[in-house]
Image (cartoon, rainbow, N blue to C red; front, side):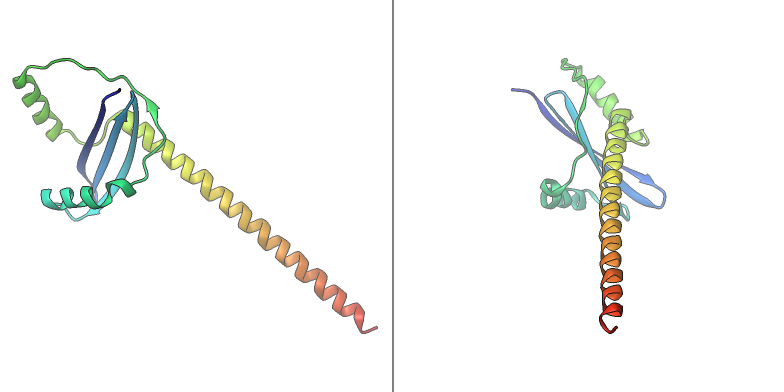
Length: 138
């Protein structure tokens, strides 16, 4: 059975605080982006995760490489400090978010096209009905 890991990165993207959830399962990564607004406190983030994690819509999965190696505790501490100072999100996460945006865009386009066709059909039937009513009187 593969390893499953989750990571949340919270950063400031003017004018809001944004959180990026990364989920790695079976060497595939999927992400989602959440806008918090004001700077969230740790207990607010924990509460958000407990209440909303299963309702989040993650992006489609992308292949990724998962490295499993034992690390020196001091090295892990340095890496954690480095991650705290990092700005933004990882490139794999960015790719996954971009893929999710593109899919949402395609869905929106499809809905808009369907609505446009329905409206054109409605107008056409209304026009035909008016034409028939004009000829009934003569």
